[in-house]
Length: 503
Image 1 (cartoon, rainbow, N blue to C red):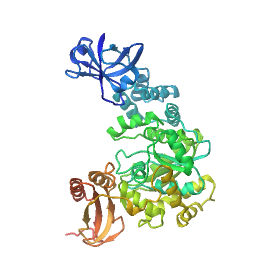
Image 2: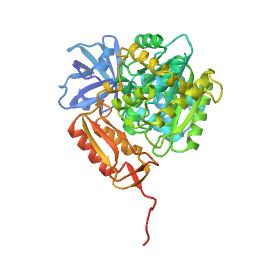
Image 3: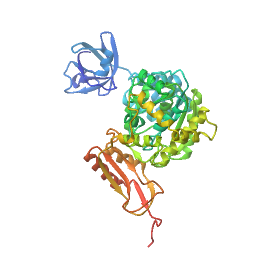
Image 4: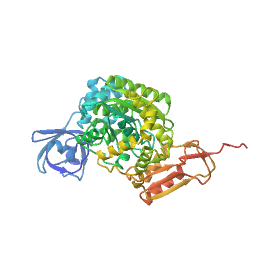
C-alpha cells in the first residue's frame, strides 16, 4: 500500500516507520510488527509504530535512522508492507527453546542482523536471555567473538599491541589510569579503549575525560596512541564491535544482565579489533562483585585463556579483591585526582597502588620484560622514578589535554556532606552496591565533580564522630538525596568486639 512520506526528525538506533492507527488496522498491522518500506528503488526493514496523531491517514512517518537508508523527502511516495522475520530469528528461537549449540554460520547471521538493525529489541533480548539461561560452549563463544569483530571496524597499528581490561563491578577501579602509563613507560604499546559508565559511578573513559579528550575518530585515536606509545580513549562512536554496543543499550543495561559468553565476546572482540596480542584481565572477586567467589573467578579465567588461545591472543588473568572500593575516591573528578596523586607517589590509599602495580607486574612478565616474580618491583620503580607520571602527562598531551594539570587543579563538587561513625569500633562491612547508589544519587558520572571519598574500610578502627564517608555534589539537591540515601542504607557497618549480649 502506498503512502505519502513524512520525515520525523527523531534519531534512534532502531529503524522505525509510523502509520496512523486506521491505516495499520486496514493492513492488519500491529505495534512492533516488522515492515518493509520501499521508495525510489531503495528499501529497508523497519519496526512499525502505530499512532492516532503523529501521522495522518495516508501518511507514513519515517524516523531519521530509517531515512538514512531511504533518503526520502516530505511528500515522496513510499510503499509499506508486512515483512517476514529474517532467518536469524529462527536461530535465536532454536537456542532459546531447545538449548542446542549454534553453528558459527548461525551465530554470524544473528550478529549481522543485529548490526543491520534487522532484529527487534525483543528478538535481541531473547538472544541474550538464551545465553543467560542456556549458556554457550567455547566454540559458540569463539564464533560470537569473531562475528562481532568482523561486523565492525578493525584498527591495524602494525606493531605488537598490549591491552588491559577489567570485568568490572567494583567502584573506584581507576587502575587503568596507572597501568596504562606504567606499561607505556616500559616501552610496551598499549592503546586502551574504555567505555563510559553504564551503571557505575565512573567508567575509565569518564575519569580520563576529566584530564583530556577521550572521544576520537579511528584515525585520531591511532595518531594519539602512536605519538605517546599508549592511550586511554572511549570506544564510543568508533564502530568497533558495533553489535556489542547495540546489545548493551537495548538489552544488557535495561535488563541488568551480562551473560558470561556475551561478556567474553564483548571484551575479546574489542581487543581483537585493535590488534591486541597480549591481554591482562582483571577479575575483581568478592561480595557484591560481578564475580563473587574465587571458584567462579578461576573458571572465568580459564575460559578467557582458552578463548584467547583460539583467537591468537595470550591472556593472563589477575584475580583481585573486589569486596570494597579501590582507593578512597569514587566519581570522575575525585578518581582523576587520586590517580594523579598515586602516579606522583603521593597516594593516600595503598589499595590503589598495590592493585595497579601488581597487575602491571603481571603485564611485564607476560611481555617478557620482567622475569617471573619481578614484575611488581619493576612497576613500582616506574612510579618511584617519575617515569609513569611523565608518560601519563605525555598521553594527556597527545589526546589534547593540559599535560601540566595538577590534582589540586581538578574541580570537584562544592556541596559536601559527611557521614560520621555512630560508634567506636571496627569497620566490619562495606557495601559496594549501596556506595554505587550513593555516588549516582550525588550526580556521578554525568556531573563530573560528584562522588565520594571513603575513610573507613573493613578492619579500620574508628572512633565515634570520625568521618567515614565524605559526599561531593555539584548541586545542593543532589547532595541532600545522596546524604539521605547514605543514612538509610548504612553502606559502612561498624561494630565493637562485643557482637551481642544475652540476656
